[in-house]
Amino acid sequence: MSERGLFIVLEGIDGSGKTTLRDGICNSLKSNGFDAIPTAEPTNESIGRFLRDGGTDNQLAEALLFVADRACHTDDIRDKVKNGISVVCDRYYASTLAYQSAGSGGPDYDLLVTLNELATIEPDVTFLLDIDPEKGMSRVDDRGEERSKFEKLEFQKRVRAKYLEIAEEKGFIILDATLSKETLLSQAMEHIMEKKR
Ligand code: TYD
Image 1: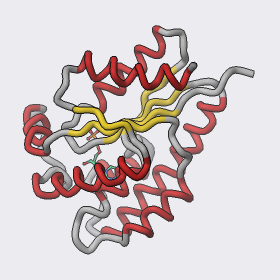
Image 2: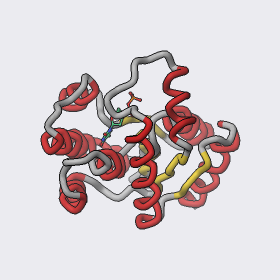
Image 3: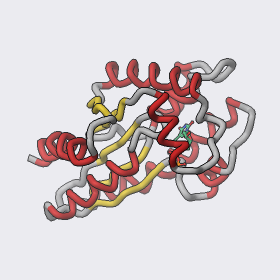
């Protein structure tokens, strides 16, 4: 039976560089001889695609759908990790805790925690890529894509504050997302290889 893979999560506001770091971690794990795959939430399955296409204005329904998408994704992650494949995921439960509690009139934070407890496994390590929302939003604009409904500066500021609270409570590793991508990758890999020892 192969050794269990690691479940690694990247969190952060929009424009914090999660996808670049995720792909760097996967390539680095592979060059160290480990099997690794990148993945993301919202997923590319039907619920995830609905959310990426704009979701719904009903905040409770939207939170439930993010968690439903995650519940299905978790089945797949659990299987891969059990079979020795490391999974590196762009966003997981802390995204719902931070984003769905940052608006006004959204579901109660404790309810979001309870729902996520039903749908998740605990990652081996979660990195929070922390960045000033003004910088994050300017990176989003540089991509030339239209901003999504979540990509508004005031909202991103509240999301960042929530993320920092969650990170402290859950023991996430906070990385300074303004560092070069090489430095971020080497900092992340140091933590990851410690788990492999
Ligand atoms: P994002 O990671 O930005 O997707 P992409 O970079 O491929 O466009 O996710 C899309 C948006 O969904 C992002 O603004 C954050 C939001 N989101 C939530 O509000 N809650 C969640 O639980 C997740 C996973 C994402």
